[in-house]
Length: 212
Length: 235
Image (tube, rainbow over all chains, first blue to last red; front, side, top):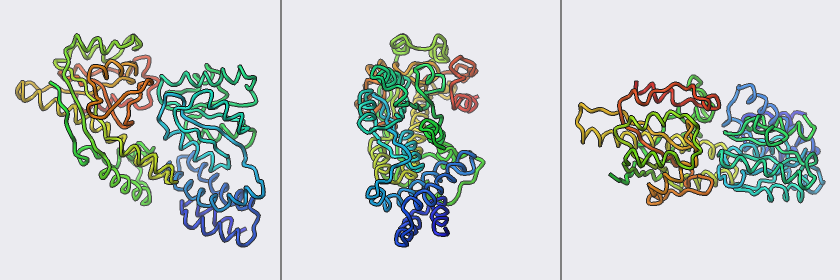
């Protein structure tokens, strides 16, 4: 459908005004909400994500596209809620307790939303209890944690341990990231996965929830 | 010697290529016009919001030994453990670009302006690093005044959290230097506030004291190896 291709194209170009205009037009033309979402907005972000992965474009381009995605989503949101259309998955994210760095976590959140996930962002300085309680309350199958200080990394292990104690390992998966974090550290603390950058985090989260 | 100093925003404003590199765009790549547009907007925003300032205080070697050893969590061997005993002058320092920039970065993300927010974050990070280099230049100038042109020390900054100096070293550094006087505080996780701040020690001495190979065990985990460029600049 041409208009959906146009939405995807304009999203790739980061033209948020055009995406908003075309999204409204698609809605006015009574195109199904899920079609606009999947074949317009998410399709455009998928291309952006792939180009970023292949180093054809850079993070500023991705963020401009994310802004355009958001412009379209804001229009679709009332319909998505009204028609009870679920997101592809739900993820609780935050920077761990003691850590106030949030840029990386913000980028992951933006890119997860771009991929159609519902993101519950707890912000920074998040306690293990908050991560786990929120994931349970929100029925979120994934907790994503960010740390930029070596001194705050142990909190990630505390979250994994808490899930274990509450018999939630396996039901709620964990993915970690941040400059001092590594795949080895993830294995060491029993985290389910590790994302080396924001784009990779989306790929790994999709795998954790069994899609893509 | 203890000195608080103010820097102009122009002095600490970084060049475009440095900022774009922090955004993952290699120096050899010419970015699209729209990215340059965002960079220009972020740079203007930085100039209007930043309040760069610093504090430095000279310390005796023996006292620095205690600060450096901290809680005993440093790597067994580090470059600094060999550098500071050879330094003719040591000075603790803290620099910051101020809180207003950090607040604006958060605000931009909150109002769906992630590209601009992230760009401003990169500008501020690069500016904080430049402020640290300016603190080093400041000490260098003072030493030349004191010791004359024939004594031309090279001064480089070293910070806790890097090159084997454990980040908990910030605690003793902050206890001694008291950067709260310029509005920089430390939390229990050794995180500075405002975030765009740099602290550490300035070591002054002949260029060769700063020279080391990046072959320490922790070097393999380093993602920047920025020490190579710093050493090459003074060699």
